[in-house]
Amino acid sequence: MEEEQEHTHTWVLHPDIKTDPDRRAADFAISEAVSLAHALPELEIVGSEIVPLPKVRAGMLFGKGKIEELGQRFEAAEVELVVIDGPVTPVQQRNLEKAWNVKVLDRTGLILEIFSDRAATREGVLQVEMAALSYQRTRLVRAWTHLERQRGGLGFVGGPGETQIEADRRAIDTQLVRLRRQLDKVVKTRSLHRAARAKVPYPIVALVGYTNAGKSTLFNLLTGAKVMAKDMLFATLDPTMRRVQLEEGPEVILSDTVGFISDLPTELVASFRATLEEVLAADIVLHVRDISHPETEAQAQDVMSILTDLGVGAERVQFEVWNKIDLLPQDHAEAVRARAARDENIFAMSAITGEGISTLLAHVAEALQGTTISETVFVDYSGGRRRAWLFDQDVVKAERQSDDGFEFDVHWTAIQKARFDGLS
Image (tube, rainbow, N blue to C red; front, side):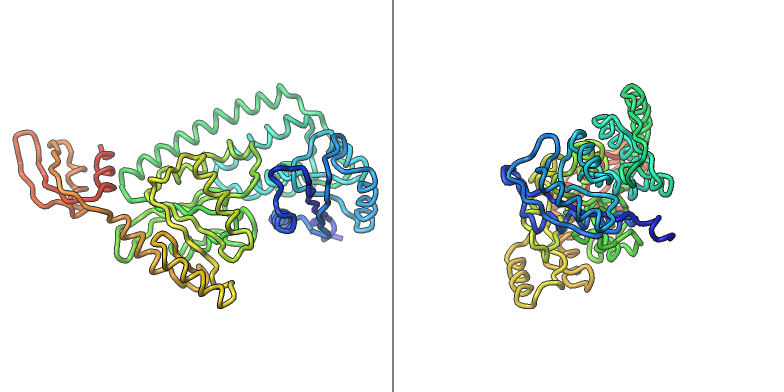
């Protein structure tokens, strides 16, 4: 009895719309949609299928015959929630819920629920709330459900028959203003923390990649941290940062970021931009790819598109980390290793077995050392911290004292120079 209350019988549909210019391979799309649904532990997936669609029906999404056919299957399987992998208008949602007598959730609503489950920091929680309010505002309904009471969720997921309370737009707007003010304070505090880190100063190495590519597993391997590293989409949401001493290089800050995904809801692209700000501050970006995934190339393109949108240009040092090589057949794995060996910016590895880790870290250390230059810098007598930093970095070749301060002949990298300039 308890099990039935805790798990919502869920069916996942992927509408394969023939006229969609951005149409994805249906097999991979439904697989990803099911993985998304599995990311919410209270959902029990009892079925999934691809629904071919010549065109979208404005009021119902699907044709009348298909709706009746699906309804019979849902009734037989005692389905309580239908997840539709794509956008569903408020009118379509209401009509489908009425026709099937179930709760309907579109891709955006599902991802918002997942983000609500995963957000751990104050900033992450505020961003989820703002994104959810923006989403709700378009629907003018708010469903309070047993799941919301169980886990403090957003209330999009639930069984049939809950009361739909029409949301007051002005009330939502007031809440958005309040949340935005709170978020501004949190972001300002975080900016101060980021500025303080810049003054430490350690180079930043950011892990980015499509969700489920193995970033958190790699992060755990390098840092010994216990970041959630499960085989589910969006396992990590808030950036996690740790200091790591490279064996033959400097101490660095390693940053694990939220996984990217195709067709990320616009509400979340805007709201979660701040969670990726660490990438903008990174000296090196490690693009972690699941090289065993059938759509690894398409996933890589999605990641690069988002990085470009964020303003991470080609001038930033970027390495591709071809992870999960241990999951490939032997002949395929050998071909991948050979391909990576021909490109100095690609590294084949496994975060599970540790293969290729030392080679990757050696190249990261080498890139951070960079080309060294010699020049002379001046530090006045009040700049004791800057003087100490120069000696701590072991870049001073000669020191001279004058009436106003100290003159140093230094031999350093461009990164060290930039960090010195940022010290006060």
